[in-house]
Image (cartoon, rainbow, N blue to C red; front, side):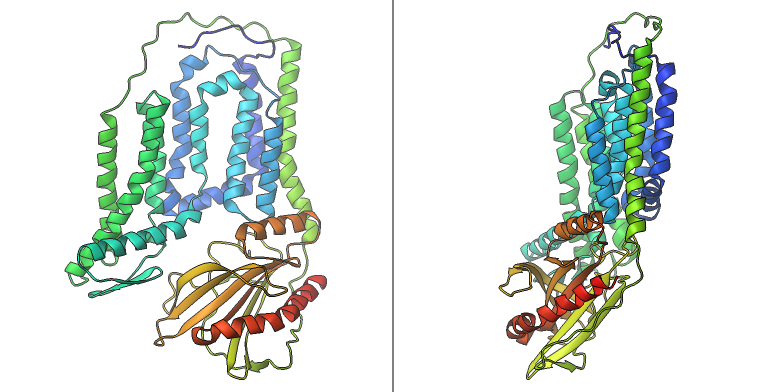
Length: 513
């Protein structure tokens, strides 16, 4: 039960605080409206995050269920969360400068939560901690796990097929069995099942259990079960197709059977979980809350100081971003000339492959040869980046999963010892479906305002730091590729001689902004 307790010297009545809190929430939504609208747009277009539409109403309902307990408490605005609010604002700015949706949307929701806790105080916030924390499920994050989940799904499916006596040959996300070819794409990753299960499972654990131990165990189960269920679903789909001559579990049936199987598994999980439900301990009746005493002037003043302080911090991020963006804006780039060593000559393209990098501000793709060695070069240059045009994003890949011709067979990191090239670069092998045994080996890294890296995280951080220093967001991806049979000799030889001119070209393009 909740004891009324003695109101602190900074406590106020609900009637005094609620208007300030409402105004603060409206203020934050005003400054972060683009971030909020981007979240809603993702909810509307992506089935994976459609559940987020009901998260705010559920949070409000959970708070409403506690209205009786809350009536015994009085708001006590606090200044202790100013530093966490400042950190959230800085991280939002970093995310906005580098167009990272997950970071800006998470920090936006976190800013709202910190503002609410600051306005209401810790005693009240403790009572509604779960409803407030549940709002974090609004953030459409999780796509970063998709490649890993796809690899796990492909691995388990092939393992299960072989265990049941069906020969399977696997290359990357593709595998071949006697009845046909199969490919694990984004929809097979199971990310939507996992996110839906964790969201509903967390709510179920809160409503049905009292002890923290049981709640955490059930949340853990709601993470593991959909992963395993998705593996079984993928295996089931392939087996249905194999046994029916690819007449069943194809096309739309693929998704229908998948959701049906997932629904059955999750229903069983909740039914089992309900057997261990806990009933909250009975509470004895409490006296009606006392009439609130008139608040002191210092308490009202503190409430206004908290509100104004939070409001100023919340607005600082968007204002700083607008100023930096205005200062960075410049004309579209024109890639400077590339002067390669004389022994490397222009050549006709030896492949129709092109990296799936969208909306580059400028790009160059060419082939070069030296005696029997042939090399391809692709440079995608980005400037004035935003959410539609950005270098580092999950959709910028060597080959899209929907590509009808090219597929990525393997990817890894490799250490190289070439001056002007990062010590660790990304390497990949690509296969073409059009030409038998047509394989490419690819080297890839990023150039960010003169600095080189092969890490997505480092690239984002370098871009943010460059913009904060007033140097703009000029960035590029550098990709070298060669036929597999000659790649081991050709790629290092070309990189050693050509990387200097490539870096000079990018530096000259940056200097001309």
